[in-house]
Image 1 (spheres, one colour):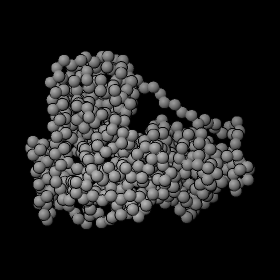
Image 2 (tube, rainbow, N blue to C red):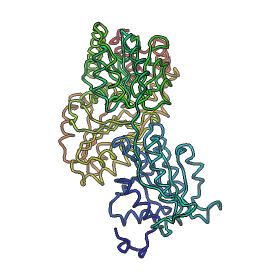
Image 3 (cartoon, helix red, strand yellow):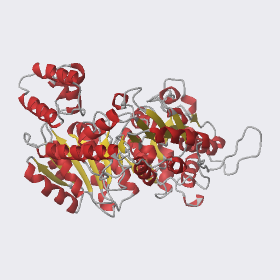
Image 4 (cartoon, one colour):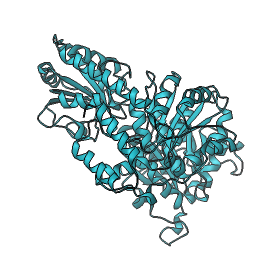
Length: 601
């Protein structure tokens, strides 16, 4: 917008205007934030920018940071969030730590009290450098003069992209209001900058490739562990599996990378994984880790059991979770393409057949679990039934809690469908802001968000207001939210039993009753409440046929256990120890016994 058309500031652009213009130069489509007087000049500049970039008002600054992280996850681009000083800045931390731990590029722009008040104990004055020094430690700067704005913002963007981390730019209120410097002087102490960056092509050395091939060719029971870093290498992974007669498992965040229906795909590994993945890891003699840094090390092969090769673009993670004999640092797809000509086709398909049988057995077990009756409804049946209803172009957001287990084990994603959760931070409350970020990026694509009642009460109900406020502007109104309503913080309840041998602590675990479907109706959305198995298929059909966003409230049984596959006997004893201290517990024991028998124990 020409300077003379900007209301309220005469003809001279401000630093706030220059900031917004620089974001536009970087191609930032939207800024997620919450208003406050400490960022009023930036809000005014966004107003003058007339939606380029768009300002997305959230219900809480934490949601703004979560949405920025979600934007980075679904798009691969930098997410930008905006908050005022003091409480607004503090609220950003959870979403920024989500970006830090999951290594996603996010830039936080934060206001600050006027420079002359700093150090006086002024209203809402917080030491922002101390506050953000860990979460945004790679780049954290305060703009103290108009001449600094371009280079500091450029550096924040470049660092975030290059290092895949959150960064932070603090802009005091008086600096925001100051006149921008349209042409920087060519003088000592003034640093020019350009809004550009680029990514390198990273490939391993040929000697390392041959060493890795030697290890893999010597294996007779090869397993692949696939993480999100293998995205884009789907075809190469399938070719390696075929050549070596291997099986492949995925980390939770690697689940969308490989096709769910492949006979060699054993499903997700780890505590919330499948029996087939546990068997693959327990029986393999060689392990190829591709783009994965999964922290569940007790579910890897035992040390000394398997020789290992690891492919990752980050040298710092190679060998950090499992002893590795050959390391390949490079892009996953290009590295596997370099590796494939050196691999010899394994003529013995016995291991492959063993994997296929294990996968088929797990799928039968999963189907049986989904059909098991519960009181009033089995959560596994709800998520299992969703698989056949998913549109091929769906985007999925998954919250943290029991719903993560059912997603990992039962939801068959369409090929290429993105799905994200808060993985390393494992923060409850991520599904709704993630889903909104996905929808705002691609308003013509359907979104499904999966959450438990605890996460919905933590903050999902707030962002359902945002859904209700914005859905009429979307090309496709399909935004389906599943709420597993069991009145319990279910994952922690089962952890209390399994990890500690303690009984469920009702005061800490009870989730207050709330009418989720009725609340959706109150907001002008569609609400569907189900509490029996014969309602599941109909509910999913109606949800995806609706002319507006839908909340499916599934009243499910908290007695359905969250068990690791092939749980060791000592862990089972701990669960029984906890249950023995609780009143009742017959339903939990019956489900536990049934699942253990189905796994052959």
